[in-house]
Image 1 (cartoon, rainbow, N blue to C red):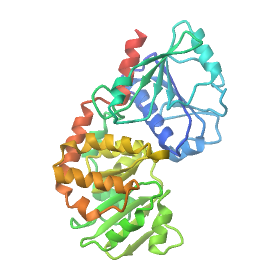
Image 2 (image 1 turned 180 degrees about the vertical axis):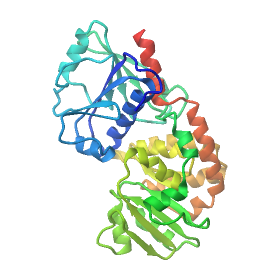
Image 3 (image 1 turned 45 degrees about the horizontal axis):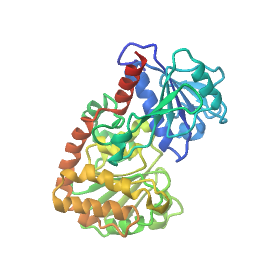
Image 4 (image 1 turned 60 degrees about the vertical axis):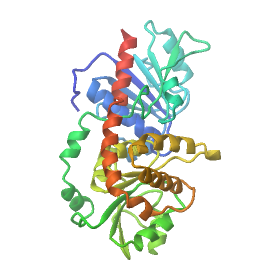
Length: 384
């Protein structure tokens, strides 16, 4: 991969502990690739679960302790104290999602003549407090070091979210019909059909929604990457399993199971659909750049701690909608996240307004700047 700019002397280490299957490594891998390809950084990423990494990038060999893919050096972070076969301290050190750096690495950072820029990359949140805490320093209690909190966000004063420079051009060049023939084995469904992509956690609301699509007045074509929701599809259609390549019909609903979609190909799945159900952080961000209506399944937390984050995202995304459409989106998102039974007709009757808002929102979000670019600019200012 050729960097958009000439390679720099900036070396960057990213530490990532895989907690939620693909969420943490998904964000870190996307960030690593972008820092390498667009900013010319020399990037090394430490990951404690190479099997999960392999699912996102087939070039990663789970059996190798050290390897390279997409211009990024990858090391298996196989124990808390491990910090690479050779202890080399980078100029920029990113501690992703409070994973805690190896003590030996922190001690070596403190001994470095020119102290590295130490960034604590936090989880994405649209809550108002994020802008207040973004870029706040946190001195280390024992070493002459300070880390900076870097918060992804949806509004001004935050780190923004990840977006590659080529993404819009790639979407404009996307051949929807060719994608359908290659990945589903059929042509694009007719215009009277609604194409839905479904990437979700296990969800008790799925049975009722599938029944609504079965009984809908117009056809619904469902695309389901193989994963945590596959069992629910199999039960609904009375099948022993619903793995990649499977297809089934009931009433107005036709469903197709796809293989697990690697990260660089996920955007095309979103572009191929009319409305996208997404989960977690990485796919939530990609759905916003896809400029299509979407429904977010936020990662559930104890004591419903995730619901204020859901409402905060809604406050940003739905603010430009007419009142009735805004209420419908809020109702549907909340029921999909456990607060009752989702009403598809109530939601989708606002399709024209949702489509207009999706496109406008992508432009608003872009004005915040992309996360990799904002992070690189901050690091550059600290390395002077």
